[in-house]
Length: 101
Length: 419
Image (cartoon, rainbow over the protein chains, first blue to last red):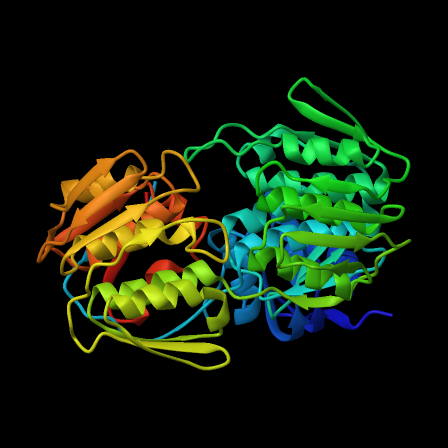
């Protein structure tokens, strides 16, 4: 059973609630497919993330690929510092499109 | 290529945290291939070779996750191929460490032969000969070591020369072999002991690690466990020398003083006041100029070759004449020429450097040639008059986790200029 949800806030933001990592990555990707491909730019808000690992980072990269292929803009808001650190260690930090609060 | 710019003249002070040892983390990551359930490895340094190793394991189909505490969780049960390709091995010679585990657990391995090395030859024939003696069929063709075995058999292995990665590879291979393996003339380095401790925690039966004779009783299987890599003794020593060379006072945290007895002894000879606790070391030069020290490198527990260049830098500005003898690697004085460009008075005679200390070095653009040479040039820059530019610092990034941040935290005027 998923321990994370991707909720549409209605203002161009999707909010992740719960764990954002190995245990929930597949489910979040599946949830994302239903919500993401709607032909509009989006911000994904990670303020509700309770824990993360590099699988969460992999999901972010997959979403970035999907948006780039669709010619849409994606930004990430409130990325946890621990996830940014994993991105830095992986030399991926510069690739993440971060939104400012 | 990034550069480091160092404005010399500041005495270092403050505290610095030591990372896990790369030379322990790499074999332990390779050892995860032996486990039949997931492993969790902590205190892994944030270094390029670690990322490369994770990439190597990932290509094999091994599942890796980095968690929020930067622990690496590895599940080798998803492995789908047993190959270490040239494009990875050429960038990291330690890739050969997957040979023993792959062969021992999965019965096959294709590992590219590593290329040359700037600091001297590091033969892989001892790995191959040892595995053959344990019953493996090995062919070297098209630049690859192609190995097969049903189940390796324990035997007595006598190493012609002391080799750390050779000892580690054969020790890992022997854990799942049939019967007892004895490795004679084994490497005694703390990183070998750390690997043995990890393997024993996984269920291996290894005794004698840390001596020149290691006994391994083969077992049927190894299981995943949690393990924290030991602190990096060379990073510890490098920051202590950085403090000593600048006449500073620092505390090094999350380290293990017992790993660097001989380095501490040499620093005391240089005039440092040193105190130690279970996991910390303080060094205080009391503002004094260091005294010259003589150093002879040799395998552990003698003075490590990986600290030779740093003590060369120390002697450049020390009071007196210091003699450095390099007994481990050929061609490991490439930093000397760069230090001479900074005004150092060094005379090279074969494997010996005779260094007459001068009052102050002068900043110059210098080029890093290998990992420890790079570190020594940074140390020289800390005490040089003016701004030293150290080029080709990708070498230093291979062994030092966030070096400019850590030195800046100790008060050094150092910054990185990205390419």
